[in-house]
Length: 617
Image (cartoon, rainbow, N blue to C red; front, side):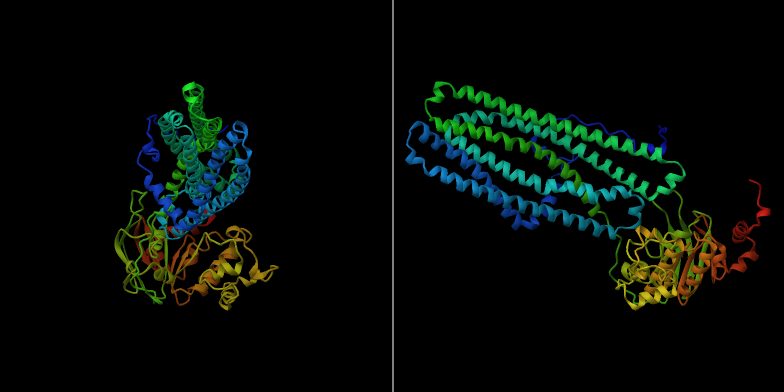
């Protein structure tokens, strides 16, 4: 067993203590923090009532279904009196026929109610998933910086399935079982109102039990959802990083990490099961106790002399039948609380603040002049500024390379241009217009990106290229871009050519092939500004030469910003900007900077120092 270190400790934080404060029925819908979650449930019901026609039809059908049950019990009273007490069969011969029609009608009503309530639930799930995904597309980069991927994925899979319980299953039970109880109580009142009042004495006690357990259900459900998010994240990381896990022998570490998280989920699940297992029998015993008391009182002459055998039998059957919907209503509390907890998780994503959009100025095609004016930026999670006092002008068609040590700010200075992050101070101009005055769509239409970590979709080569302009895969521009980027050199050797599937994130292709597809995608977009984020740093020498040739074609007549570790790839740049601790240390052409013999020269010497001159390890 591996020792628990600081990384695994993130998965082993103790659960917060559970308050044993008793809550009352009016507080049944409560959040884990003690604040009312009625707003959350009301919002969820808004989705449900968006299909009110189907909900109304399903509800009416369920009411009819419940009414038929009560009618069956009610008809048994006169049938027993007529058949076994009065021996007047002619007066009751219509009852079996009526019961047959009631049973058939009951079955139809049950089907209609179940289908349409289920339809409403499925509709709610569809809308919530779509709204979550829609919002996900417009969230700022900082949101993803602070989110665990597994937790986000669990919202789409685990949490959203739990919502259907609060959105439709609990609603169906509330309609069906509550109406059954009401109808059966009506039958009991008609047959013996005195005994019915005795039966109702237990209702406030049941309400207290339900209120208490609701708080526990909410707490455990919320914890289970968090555990599922961590489980999903661990599995995802293990799948994506399976090579690293294998090469560094991390199997046991991953297994132990998963085991601890899985055990936490099971622990909370068992607590929830224990709460459910305890509450249901308590309620059933309370109802059973009242049933025994009613039977004892009903046997006394004062009660038995005033009613017929049929009426008493109908009363007893109705009272026994009430136990089933009463038991189901106690289970609704668990479903409801679990669904509300999941709803809060989902609404948290849906309500997340979108990127700050400006619908004002719109560029058709910029010339490509970029100006940084006293730009400052700091990541919320860091103490030091990533950029401080950056002032820089890049002319249209100019190629500017940014170099520096890790953490110097060279990636940040490029990431603030397409507004992946908004600067804290200063401004950035594109063709003399502040990028904050441009719509995000218009701004990003002017920029193409080729990065070191190429992102490809699990689709064909052609569709990954066509993604740049949302065109069909057989568009002539796709083939032309593939040709210029030298994609056709390897796709022509594949059985399906450009229609070959690349696998998840291009796993079926080599690094160089993925980069060429990324370059073809950027070529097809034909944007006037190009960002190259260490586009060749992970390639071998032969692949780098091929990619570099394709990049030179891509850079023609475009303003190009290059982030580079390999200084050999930027010797032809018009200017080199050397970054250090968020500021510009020096700037000039490659040869000029070497002659200055300062920061850039030190970086260059470090990379190109002969192996014989390297210090001993």
